Length: 49
Image: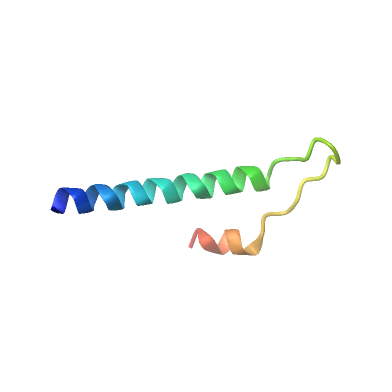
């Protein structure tokens, strides 16, 4: 039971880290059609904390 709970929390942490990295990368990427790079939202900056 402990191993299952530990693995579940480990997977949750890994997924959340991956989601943050993906969000930052997609936010900081440029749009090919308009050559516009949007700023990173404040909610995403606060999400890391």
